[in-house]
Image (cartoon, rainbow, N blue to C red; front, side, top):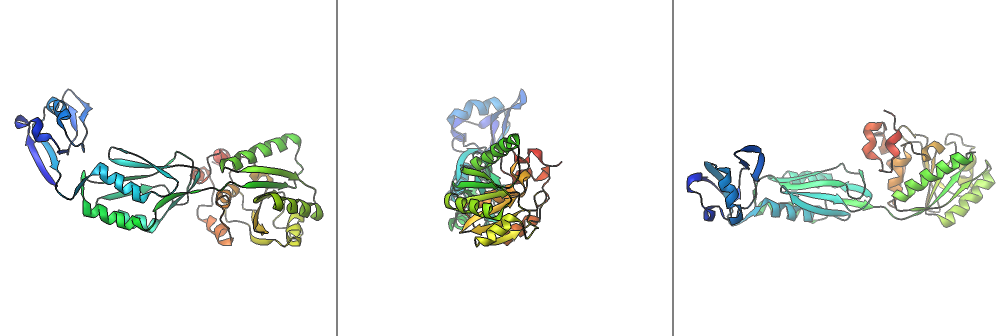
Amino acid sequence: MKAEALIGTRLSADQIKGAVLAETLLSPDDHRHILVPKGRVLGEQDWPLVTAARVRELHVLRLEPGDIHEDEAARRLARVVAGPGIDLHGPVESQMRLVAALNGIFEVDVSRLLALNSIPDISVFTLFDGQLVAQGKTVAGVKVTPFVVAEQRLAEAERVAAAAPILRVLAFRPMRVGVLVRERLELAAREKFQASIEAKVAWFGSHLVGIHYVADSVDVVAAALTELVATADLILTAGANATDPLDPTLLALGRLGAHMEKQGAPAHPGSAVWLAYLEDRPVFGVAACGMFSRATVLDLILPRLFTGARLGAADFNGLGHGGLLSRDMSFRFPSYGAFDTLDP
């Protein structure tokens, strides 16, 4: 890269051809109006605008062998950084925008992202690792700092990113969801409950196979769970008392040979949750209110369950960091409106 200062009175269309503009050219009559943006590779078509700017000295860069313009560098970098579930847009003002191609969990290889940004002139900035994103959400930006970057630096960045994508959106798996409720809900409350849970499940690309309202009987609960295990990939339950060892739902799970992974979560609201596995089917228990629109631990755990991952105690224990679920934490929740009723 070679920097040049071209004297305005001696400028010609031939002189500017192929040069990279190092400064924005503004209208001499209105400095809010941009005639030519910085970073543009100038051509003959730009000559009328350059002359209209009436500059005394024009600062440009000349590309030399091994130099890459920022637009092409951003494209190349974005292609190796972005993994599954991400679409590329741009460049706009020499920045590539990386966008979620689907609803999912945004994952970042943080250590490799740090290694990438440690390379001079390379700049990749993202949302937080583990953040939920809806289709169309911008998840990252990619660019190089200068107008022109050395091929060797770009190649180094490509080597860092080559092993595996640094960024990806983990897709949700379509699942059949069954619900078991031991609450005596009136008809109006049941309709609201069903509408809420259907909206949440649909956001993940899944569907309900049925809602069972059952009596407080170990036999009845066990029969309902047996039926749901045969028809559902994920079972949600409401109405059980996780702190009562004699609760009918917990006794029914024990009778059926379920394995309890975790009871309780270090978060609020919604700490009284539990997760068990029955014939490898996750059975997730919450308070009935947690299945309405209020944002609770339910809405933090559901996304992980819908990826098909098997969760354990460690996944719940990690909720403590960021587990104070105020409105400030709304970005952690799915965009189906759960956080609309968060405490201020």
